[in-house]
Length: 338
Image 1 (cartoon, rainbow, N blue to C red):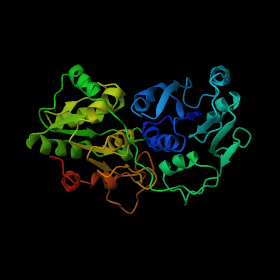
Image 2: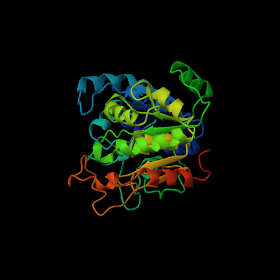
Image 3: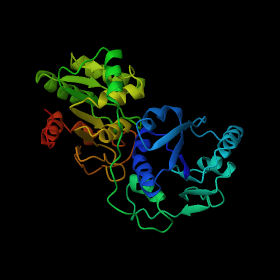
Image 4: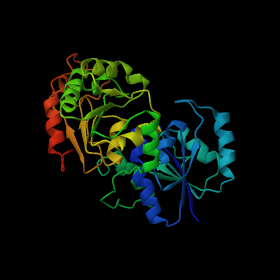
């Protein structure tokens, strides 16, 4: 049985977009055992990917070299006799553990000139592989092989019992259809649709007889509090759920509205009817990959700027993107949310 170790991304959205790689590996190598080495907080994502045998926690802080920790982990992994390691991050640090573990085939993009650490290195042609998901899946193929298309969309599998348990734990129900709003964006405010627009959309759906649930982390408390203040009746779950519960609850939503964020990719991988709001960023590299997703963007002359905060101070790309545009996109979904 072939055994492959994946050094997985640390960001939620990137971790979701790696799932088609695992599906391609399972297709190419029937019976393959795929383990992922990733930060502990990504475990709920990997637990919902049936191709993965085991998630192994990477005990390193962001940017931490931690050579002794890497050596100790490499000694543990060496005993597992992996045939191949596939490295999704492009950093030198991410290549150290597979090299120290003596994994015979170490595959990845060159990144930070990792010639010595990789022995199956690839040189990236960005024009041939414009999307992140394509760059991940290409690493499943032999070197110099043209990537076979189409690529399957990312997919997360939720157990119904887990969703029921999350409902019970948070005293929620599905008696009314659910609009999930994800108003946060870890990258910065230039990716966040204004609270007044999200609140206006929430009021519209509450008036239509829906529930509106806010999803996010503790870092999203300010914008979520602002939305709740302007739209009484909204249920604020930001910081109240684990990532596992957030995934399982979002799978119950009749429709989802997200900024360009990790939760956007989660919603897409769950197959939820989704409207993704884009401001300072571009959907070219990391779009929501789902036939039930729609992108809303004003495409103003200064976007995408890819800045964390608006360099011109007006944030026209999101301030002028009103709730009626997002509602129209929701109604245009096929089929539209009930």
